[in-house]
Length: 357
Ligand code: IPM
Ligand code: MN
Image 1 (cartoon, rainbow, N blue to C red):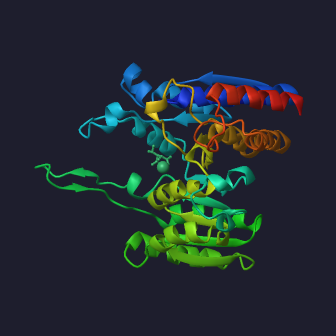
Image 2: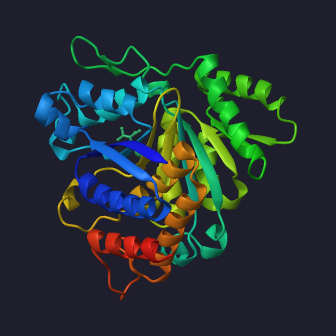
Image 3: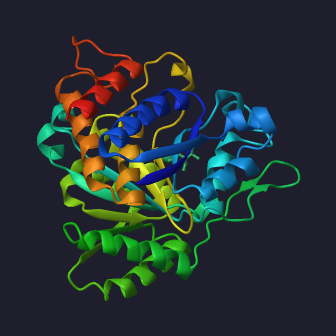
């Protein structure tokens, strides 16, 4: 099979973790006789520096022409510390999501046996937790207009907007996933306060009727935030709007053991994008210390979701599990008193595993 992918390393640690993911992909393709064809393009702060645009037209064209996009990370302190900056790196990611129509962001939260001890949460509570967050990605406060400042600059506003259509397509997707899993959907909203949330609840209740075999639960987001860390094993498929999903999935990473472990898939109308959920960790850029596993696991999701290559994806996941068991890991997940390894060393270990298994 020919895999035509767009590679967008982005900013900060993006290029380093992407190199590892690409090496692992190459090894898998070699083993299974797939032809990997990839082209690299700019996005985020590096794209602003080179072109003035965080999501250049050239990058968009490449994404549109590819079968899948592998994305590294975006963000730079240069812009974080300047609230008046007119163009921001994150706008590149948002523009990409909007223009590719990526309305569903799928973030699996699972535990790895060898990492449960790394979580600050009690082992008996999290061991075996396995749920899927489905975050709406092209609506809500991220994209609602008007957004901005009053003329005197002393008031700022964001607008949260959702249409029935936007809610319906994502909630349906959540039910479809639940059918293939443990058949439970948790709809997270703030229906006691927000009008958009009340529409979410109303639409979800209608859709629930089409899935009688699936149990539906509604939770307010504040309550959900608590239950996720208290009883993570209660969740199967969690579906929610853009901003709530952003926050709850960072929280979910605590269950996994490190933010450096969570992959994601963004799917929708055009080419799907696969990316780690973490940021660009600028302080670590160029130091070869970042955990590449979230990006490697995102590459596995890409093989499964975009190309239906399940064995290949499984081999990558096995390699990751094996590296954890062998304690061949970066500093963020190394046990106290145990050695830690560089990003590139972990990469070599994974490639070696893939080639030998
Ligand atoms: C994420 C990130 C992005 C988001 C940022 C970088 C714009 O935090 O993918 O979760 O908020 O969606
Ligand atoms: Mn986030």
